Length: 240
Image 1 (tube, one colour):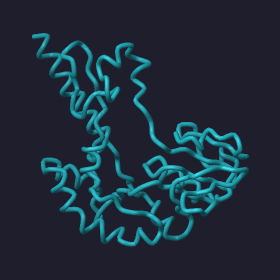
Image 2 (spheres, one colour; image 1 turned 60 degrees about the vertical axis):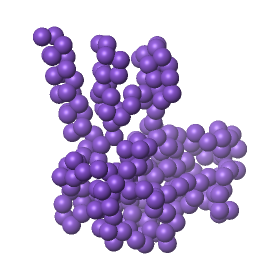
Image 3 (tube, helix red, strand yellow; image 1 turned 120 degrees about the horizontal axis):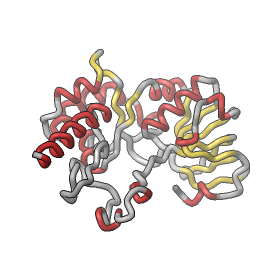
Image 4 (cartoon, one colour; image 1 turned 90 degrees about the vertical axis):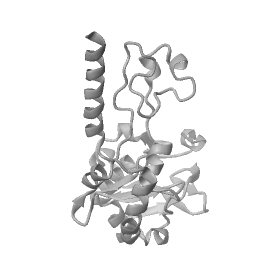
């Protein structure tokens, strides 16, 4: 969380996306959503659909994947491409994504230099799955601003000098695994990342397995199912 998020000069309400329930529960008229992950995109879209005045603050380049391409769900395409190297997958999909989102710079959104899958594998950052957020931005229902610079009263000032008056700020800035609350030896197990490495279900060869820590373009629940089967097979093999 940036320093500005702890400033007491803001006259409105600041909440994390984990505390967000729905647009009606906010009981506000003007909302700023900070971030551009799936929580941010969906919260901004829901608030705009409810008739609120909505803006979204995006600090850097973004990756966006439509829910479907040419009528085919993106998850289905990802499953078909799962055996290819990430950079090859991104190269294959790049022309279609460019055609779909080539106008984004005119709305203040900069496309990331590396593709969605490469960014996910290298940085663990999931792209925005577009279920209507970009259409709302194109219609002007969601305003786009760069990173937040400061707060004062009901006004939010951005890094480009522009400002937006709002009642509520929703911080859709991500989540941490918080494994420390479960594992007293977390710093010994994972001294640098505080979480298992990508694809490592059984890091120390003891009785502790980790499931669901791998971002997956083919769907997180699907990935959890695959990992759960692998863990069960490993446990059975050790018991025999």
